[in-house]
Length: 489
Length: 112
Image (cartoon, rainbow over all chains, first blue to last red; front, side, top):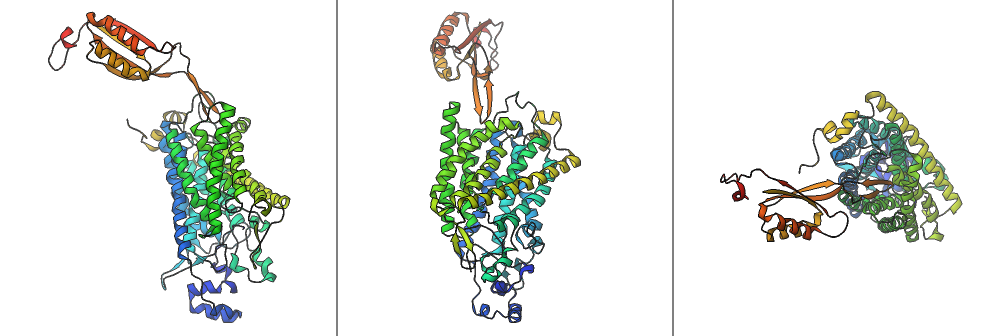
């Protein structure tokens, strides 16, 4: 099934099919509107209320994604830098996560998940306006992927907030150990606004299954959806929106911020692979919320996403480990942890969109492809992508996005996707067709985030300069940027 | 009196300490150090980045013994720290002019 999200209660989209939801929000006014529009049958149907199991699962998933960012991503990244920069990495993750959460609730959610044009949403949910009505204690509802199965919109807001926040945190792995803290924050605000939000809108926004009531109006409802959604691209939990988006932004950053002092000449060794292992494991744990939560319901689709997230990751750990063992001589802990992240990244767009065969294949391939990404490909690119955001997230994301198109095929054990939202009919357009759609979605995302990243880094550079001074970098960002040190022993 | 400084393999510390105790040495100072000699370093591989580690971790022990205990102490360290492979370490000996126990003010051999 396609995975695209929508609010159903934007002011701009008060169409008759939403009236049942509106009842919950504006009570008697709805009846007047209903009479005016002549859809009397909607009155008799009781307004659907969110299922308590779904609500509990989605709030749990939201907290899980927070865990996979702060602390998990922070520890994973932090362990990979030198001792003198440990706190700077933890601090960057902590503050960027918080900053994006605030921006998300201020305007991000509205631009990403309300109806606007095919690239940007509208402003009807600024500061989450209209999600809770204190006058009657009612909450607005958001669509899921099933008819008549709404979710509290505030839960959806929070769940998606964590996605936006972790995506921005992923980027900083490319530019750690030398980026200026103020420049990072400026970059992140611009990039979030002009790359994350439109890409999320393009890939995930649609009016929701309840909007499709009549085959004759399907075209009109489709036209309100995001640009990439309309193409029929499949992205369950963010292969394009999260990983390609962040991975390309990271690579551009590695080029523009430049190499760390001593790169290629001095040993820039990880200071604690123990923390990296703890971080990677917690990332795996939190990713169940990320992927299985993206089903938006506690249902079969979530179950499929759950086992795929579990299995593909284990496959990638093994494929990376054994390939490294054979090619480099020793199976390393860092390799196993990197393999886990590679598998998680690649299965993200596929999670609920492929079957078990897909999880085996995508996980195994992701470990091999990303191992090449951080060794062979990295040497060709010649950028100091310090923690391999491009090699793991962009490359894993691209692989996952394309393979999703292949293993979505029912002939390969996949569930197919919804072809008709009126009747909820599943189908599959054929491997070549779906793969081409996926490739277009990948291409659009790469170009979009590439251009926005370039502008955002240049803006930050112009405003405050991208790098700390030579002396500050030598001393370490913990002392020079934050005035503290990570360890005292 | 002689100061014995020995650089040994880290995992040999316990064996050396026991051997010195048997040889009548009553005190020891231990420091974790890094260094290089004839033993080659090793390479470490972190994803695509390969680093040659030249400075290897060793343990440095220091003890002062009376002249009459010197040979026994050197023998004890050498036998205990030895693996017959490059990297077993070295022992340095030098003369000590004076020793003073802070608590009692004793000097010379009495302070050891």
